[in-house]
Length: 488
Image (cartoon, rainbow, N blue to C red; front, side, top):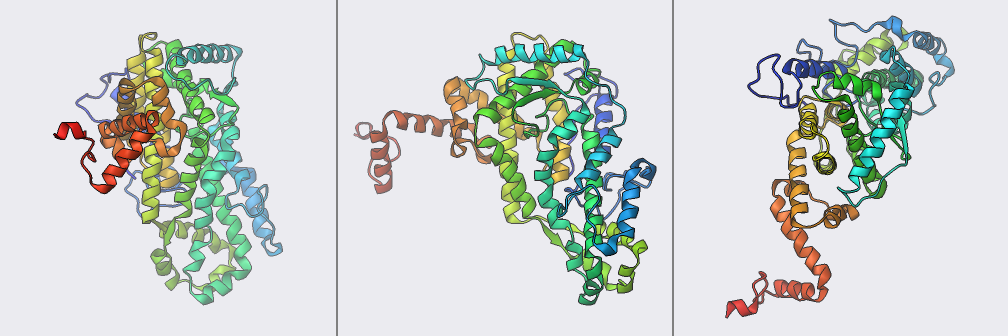
């Protein structure tokens, strides 16, 4: 997926409305593109456009992956090769896992490099900002405060605390891809490969672990809160901010550091209120990602081409295994099914509704209190448009581009709904998944609001609603909502 970039007439070095220079935005886009590739997790691109974007992590020939950084993992790989006949499991990984999460955790930590521990000053600032944000949010939503535990994380904390959720997200994709290329081989080649299946599984698990580890290591430097990418990645008992990343983020802005911290604390708190008090939301989000991933179908034409000239005896040579594993990444290509298209639209809409609600509620809470409220709101919009962590993560995991247009439309819908109703009615939409708007409602918020108001009146007068439905079904006068008296 190709992410949309910020467009405009600004010349290099000029400021956007949010105080970010265009050069800084370009630099950020370049950083993210170096972190993530454009294809879903586990896939390599079949071509290279010269800038490395279509290559898997570490595969850019202009920036070769430094194998010396792997350290113990190279030793583990040697142990795997020497012990493959014994059918050993991947060192440090759980037997049966499609991803070696031990490798992922080690590489994520190594990719991160040096980082500073959270200081008492940073921790106190996070606590005070969250307390203030919670007080202000109480006036902007009827949903009560979420987790009472507020924490300040280092990037390593983020890696460790979010890994359980990442396992749930990436396992379905890795399971689909793992071993898929063997299915496209001729029967003779598969028979020759049978004794080596354990080795193939281990190498694939390590390959996925390496890719995930590099992604998490880089992403942990950029995320600002535990909900920064739109998903509830962290434990459900904590609201978390990452002071080190927030300070780096603030350097490109012309706003006060304290105001930025309160603004981000309010966003985290608003997300946590939703995920804590809308019981179905957390599972619906993760289930939709899983549904898409499990529906992945592999285009085997590339593998069939690869296998035509394959010498089955090469499968007995460990030196050839790495070449085969690299080749399979370029040959495997995902095919999007109609079911996946539906799942993607549903996921994109739900994410846009969450982000739009958070944006609306936070702005209502701080607009009259923080002078920089409008600029910070626009900052987050431009951050999404320039390809921030959320967009790059979903593009990599599921091929989903979370379009900024959808978020703006969702925010507009929530604002208009509040104008037409009340806080209780607006937030009551989250009470059941059947009540939330769908993709068409984002394009036509007026229609959704009209239906919502009609449904609300039906709750007040259920008999009238039944009679109106009966008239509509029978085609009697009044079925269009026009009273009998008005027809005379």
